[in-house]
Image 1: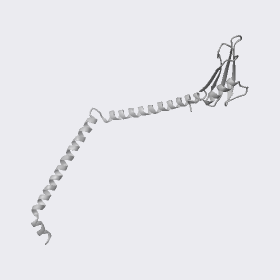
Image 2 (image 1 turned 90 degrees about the vertical axis):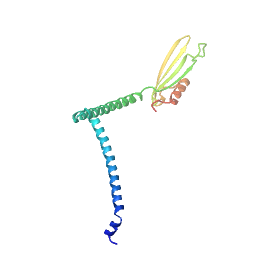
Image 3 (image 1 turned 45 degrees about the horizontal axis):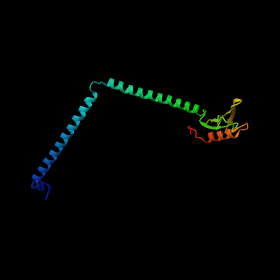
Image 4 (image 1 turned 135 degrees about the vertical axis):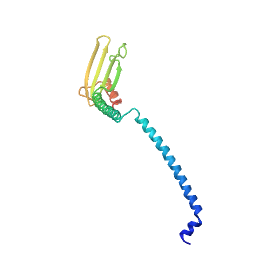
Length: 170
């Protein structure tokens, strides 16, 4: 059986298959046309009232705003670094011990106050109160948690308390 005889015997099926294929192609074309129409409407709405020049201007303004934000962010980071640098030299650790210097009836009005930075550098302020003679204040320098002058027990306790306290910059 050759090809021509096969076509003649099955020509109804071939025509029906071709017609079905044409119907499928028409449906696909309608779907594509509807999608293209929706896309065209979106494009027209996007471009409505705007020319290419105004869109270009809007885009340039947005890029300028982004550049300004980058500059502001850079300035803020520099300021924060400066603040952090300054905070490292501030007193962050505190220790205080109140005591009765002369075992008098006046109570615990004397105190030793240790103020240290992150590196345990700072001062100890010792205020000795006497009900008879008044108040005397002494200041001792602390470097790396050590004093070159001899410390009283209360000053040592205040210094140890300050060293043990947490620095908020850590």
